Image (cartoon, rainbow over all chains, first blue to last red; front, side, top):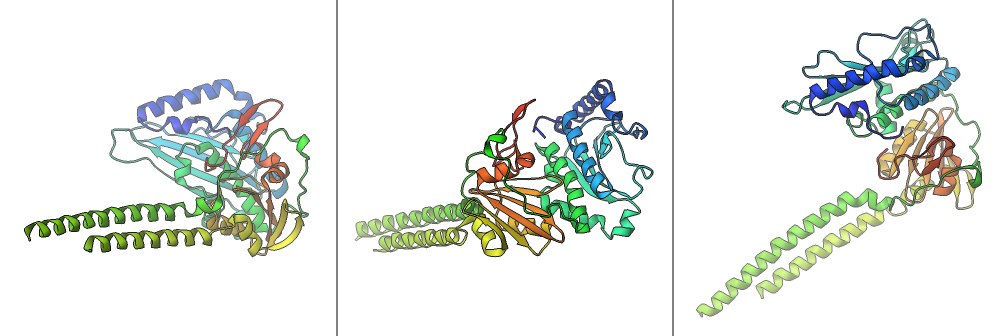
Length: 266
Length: 141
């Protein structure tokens, strides 16, 4: 995911602008990428309960779907996502769906006989004049027969997604919402594989390719781990110390003034 | 005299705060790399550059243990593993049956080992068709 401005971000602020923008995006998407939608599994009809838009670029959504497809090939279970965005006063909500079958390709029971795991995100953006704040929720759906056979509870899976990725509803409503969504969706096959006890790396991964074969360099040090860990404590100490110093200094100055006054009286 | 006592008290209190802060810093010295080394079983060590550890807990538990104790500068995951960027290391956690393998590499080695997963995220990436920089350390990804 490339961290550019996404449709979700365009929704923040006035609802009217949000709905107009999303409708425009949906129209552009419908005109610009009909081939992408049906490229993988044309037999699966897209659900049309809400206008469509993309949470990320077509390339990013394709990349995500491809990675899910690889996982499905290995695990025989479908993986996907649905993001619904609504707003106060909005006539219709907008939705983005995708799966291992491709962007805008939902999962059906017929296409996923072994079951599916899906990340569902629901976001509500309010107008700037509203007293209510933007809100959202997300959860994981595990379809039959997977739900009964695997013993993998959706709530457990949700907790594991949250804990292992560090992502939350705030991230889904933040500046890097597309990155957050992709990471949460990709955690689904990762955690399902873990649940099965299936190994991703039987042997220790080698440190190849050699430097010459990769076209990029790692960023410089992001700073001390210890400082990152303890800066809140240091900030508290610094503020507390400064406040105490000021208070005691002020008290001392008052006492000095009082001493001088007393001497003057004598 | 009273004023002198007050100023002495200020100095004592501020000194105590500084000492407490230094103790807090010392308690978290060594960083994530040393903490992992103290906690998990070594599987393979390659000089000072790379060490692979095994956790008898699940991979998701291991990643939670590490990130709970040491906040990474940046993090990422895909469908194959979790990746963390720290000051002097790149940490990757992968599933190994019911347990986890934890890779701790110096940044250059880690970037090379996991380039197909973190290229453009913890550093620069120049593919044949595009050239971009993903979110780097501090971006919270």
